[in-house]
Length: 484
Image (tube, rainbow, N blue to C red; front, side, top):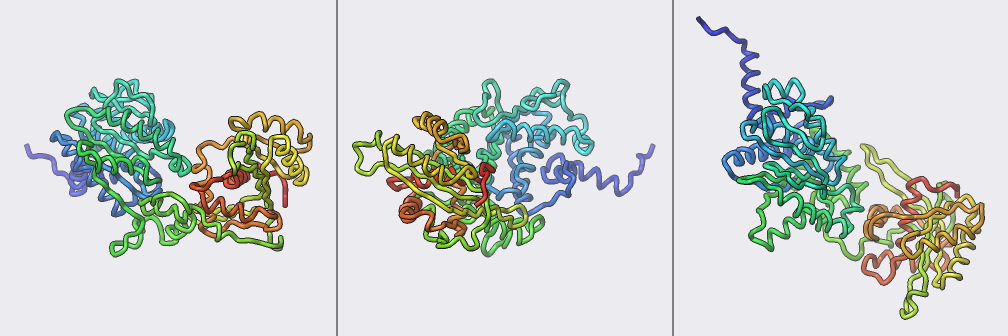
């Protein structure tokens, strides 16, 4: 009996399905899960091809370690944290693979897990991998299986408990949420410990694939420490770098013109300023002194053209009592101003900072508090006052709030992160010349304020910087109630 004839279209469809079973990029094409079209760039092809080859090597018992660095919003998570786990489970269903998915937080990783499960449930995926479907009881996002496999997919935020779980494929995607965290050494130490102790110890024998996928935020982040450790320790796993800057002279002007026009890249670079080295070019630069350029600050001697903004005053407290042995104790600073958002298009935003007043005092607590009350009274009830309320200054905040009068709007400021993290968002406005100060409102303190920013973080004092950071963050958060 003759075999039934099939059409050319059916033949091509079968060939595509066979290709998708062994090739990640083809599988993504066929199982694309979003409403918008699947757009492929040079980095998409290169990353998918390398992950496909890593999977074939794993099947032969060879481990692969990859560092993938791509600018933000270029589809890295769709490839690495959504498509790869789903395809890996189908491609290796005969091997019962375990997968660990991780990132900076459980919410992020749970979203990746949910999307990967949605891909597996799709009809397109079932056409590629018939019979590979979610096992009964796989309703959780942090732990699930596919039917007929002993392997487990575990989704856990970095630092979460992975005791008892292992991975043939281990993915860490976005180990840092924002730059304010990246510039904190405490945070970098924490994530590095989580990577070394919680993820790298979970590799299943005899072979494993480890993928670290992120936009590098800092030269000393996990990616940077992996590179440094490889140079210092020959026994550390050899990670292969896949780095795709937004622009490479002599190769391409823009990495992903299929998705973003040149105007998008220019707008992002203008918004990020010096941070563009990390966020767009995937090449963070060392940080040290001169992070701020106060000589690009625009100084105004009149209020002509000064915008009407909601202003707040940020207070960084100091008491000379604790520093009597010092010849140069800290000062208490109060910095008043507002923040204006300037959209650049394509989602990019610049922040413009307008500081109308700043003053400082070096005094014991009673005199300091009297100075603060006088300043609050001069500002009037329309200007919100945010006072540092950490550690030893909790009581000082309580005393000030009780003694300033019922009409004063006083709130505690408890910005998280270390000094470097708190000040990180101010770098771009300083670099762009978008910090404005009203010189008469500073009086004698303008040069001191500029000098502290010029010396940060190596200077002897940074109280003016801290007070400015409080003003910026609280003003940006809508804490201001007054109009200049």
